[in-house]
Length: 142
Image (tube, rainbow, N blue to C red; front, side):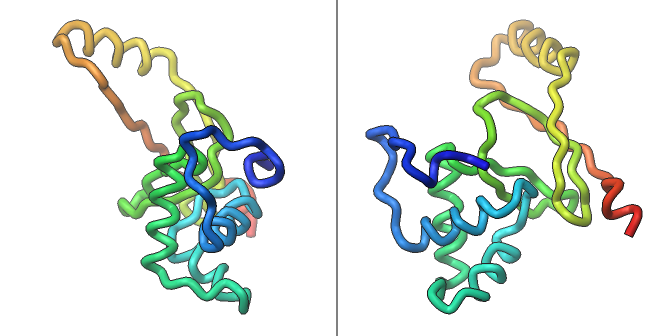
């Protein structure tokens, strides 16, 4: 999936990876789907060498997001979901509410409207979220 875990040279600003970070990255790298911290924690607990607490998993995820290694998507119920960052581009997602599969898209009209509103009202550092949820064909057919 992503080369960051195997041999890619990390930027100088990147922190040294801990055993917990390596374990969480390994689990995140196993799927492109967004998953909750609790789901990741349950997966980690299946490996006898990965005995980290849920608090550690949350801390590692926060660090991975800060370092732009992982990305966040909010679930329909507001829970934060995580996955390995696949691009630095700004994208929105159509997210399967059952399995976490995500289809990325960019909406030029929304991006243009955001820029226009920012200029009109003289706002800087503007962010926005467009979240779409549904059931993917794989989950619908099972």
